[in-house]
Image (cartoon, rainbow, N blue to C red; front, side, top):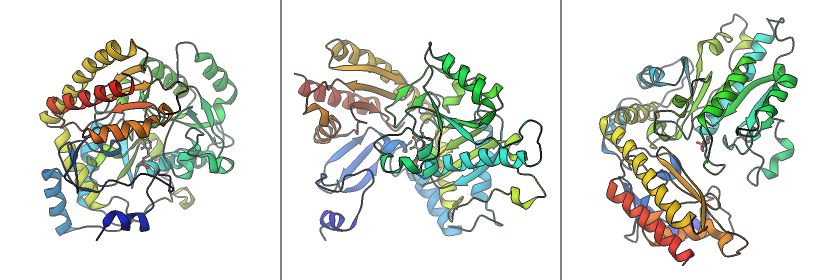
Length: 434
Ligand SMILES: *Cc1c(COP(=O)(O)O)cnc(C)c1O
């Protein structure tokens, strides 16, 4: 069978223009930081397969646990039933979470984890508003979010994300959201005014702590973000940390919120949650949120769920991944990448920023990013595709966001492999800007 031909005939790939897109690469297997195609080429997975992989591909420990679980219980309905992997995962995870969390709500992916968080927060106020009239005569209905944010592709998640080319066909159907700029040392007044005028109407604030991922790996100053959270919390607004990307060590610590004194009321997790092995989403909340749902009134039930809520295999992969993450090897891997990133950041600045061919080189833990100066150059405006092609030719998988090139490797990447990644990156820049 010609698999690629069949693919072209039958499959619709995500985020992929359907006309004249390059042929997909047929990956046969993955091991550690490497992907192997059917032609015998191998590629270093420098972006952890869309930011999900933590410990390398086809990890034998996770595979073994999955196999054992599949022989015992593969799936059951999660309303009225429960099972050990879901309970064990919640029990292990809650003490590690950044804040005082008390409940885990399961779903399937990052978008559903933020969708659940938004509904959970809005219904919190609805549930309270129908009994407590004193502080909230009409339930709070507005969501506050950052400009340039990304929280997923379902409708609620799209609504609270930046309006962009990705959401354009739906703009008239997305609900209104109050957007503010990410904090800089000069823009605190904007937020003060908004909170003064609208504070009582705002139900929740959703934010990607420290790093805006899909918005272009944009970093924010933890102290300034902490200042925003302080002001927002003072108004009783529910804080939702979307750690779908930043969770599980990406920024150096276990969670990005670990760098912040102000902790969220709700946290969203996915991507690295299962080590990148199975789809799973988590929305965790504090006791305060949960208690608004403790009611004799059935209308106050959280009527939300998915067929595959808390899938036992996904929960098993998450437990196994968490066990690996807490071992010294993973910690050392994270620290190794953090150090190598700082060294390479310096080199990029000296060698390329000084020549103005790249700008804004930055590092947050295991994530490194820079922007290629494309100017008006028509060729260079195709930069994302060009970099991806050049990198693949040289044995690395990179997928820039527009002109933003970034590394987000799995924690098992060795110093040698990282060295290979930097050599390839430099070779690409040297070819583009001789
Ligand atoms: C990827 C991402 C999502 C969406 O997750 P999916 O699993 O792709 O639906 C949401 N929030 C953030 C911060 C993300 O990086």
